[in-house]
Amino acid sequence: MNCLLIGYMHGQGGIQSHTHFLATGLTEHGHSVLVLTPEPFAGHESVDHTGRAYTLQTYKGIRDIASARMENGPIDVAIVCGTGWAAMVGVRLNRSVRKRVFFEVMSGERIGKLDPRSIVHTGFDAIVGQAKPVEACFKKAFNWSGPSITIPALPEPLERAITIPERKQSDLNHVGALRLAYFGRLAPHKGVDILVKNWGMLSEFGASLDIWGTGEQQEYLSQYIQDKGLSDKIKLRGRYPEKADYIALLQSYDLKLLPTIGAEGAPLVLLEAMACGLPFIANGVGGIPDYDNPDVRITSGNIEEFFPLLRDWAGQHEKRNVDPLRLQRHYQNMYAFEVLVDRWERFLTALVAEKSLPAPNGS
Image (tube, rainbow, N blue to C red; front, side):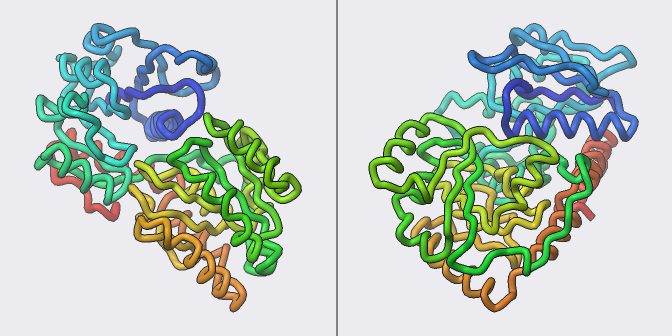
């Protein structure tokens, strides 16, 4: 197949990770892949082209996308990941494209009447939701009745960096001495301040809380921690590392906390935690409920359930019913790099061949 992927490739984030690794996987499976990205936003470094198996090009507007071509024939399928007008309109106007797919990686909720995703009704052939709740929300919000399927986005395939060490229940500290961590943006809707302001409750379970990431709440959180005299317990660690260093960092913690209270897709940081055998407690907004399994706890979407579920998880941990190795195997069976690339390939192949889409479970 000739595949065109459109997504923002500069900086760091879920769209960047997914687009890069899907393009890499499809290329390794023998498909021709062209990735189009807009120019870097202010403050973002330009993506490095070195060592990429696929072709990466920059577009400046609708005309660049509408005129995009591949050297060895028509574009069998184009996948748009993001919500920009240029990408949606440009793909629609490109006569070289045979099939068009929109991949919803956020919550699926509509953003006003002039949401560019409304263009799916003017020539797109299928939509893919990053999680089942995301797919359902998108279909309702945009009145989509055409073909749809749930396929997770690709996280950074940590298992390709090194062989990830297996974790056992005994590798986790006891309740009261847990090393707690948050990974993600420091934005109001991520709910990081909920953790900081409830340290008194968290301290029943954990000895420390490390907050990894950057964002607009960084200064506010830093000042709050200092004012409350919590600097010895709660630390802002900044941007987290990649690959082997990231694996070692994740495995140095006992529990990840994700109290998101706003619109959400299905955060890749939770997949990366599972890959390393790091259990988590998360607020079940957006597509997060798809990640549920026996070794984590996910609320119904009500943040008031977050701390009671933390207490429940801690009780099961004390009874030795939390199994990090089982969590790692769950990731390997459901979300490993080859598993997800295979699911995407089967879906795209069926769509191009105009056959029935694969079963939602990827079978």
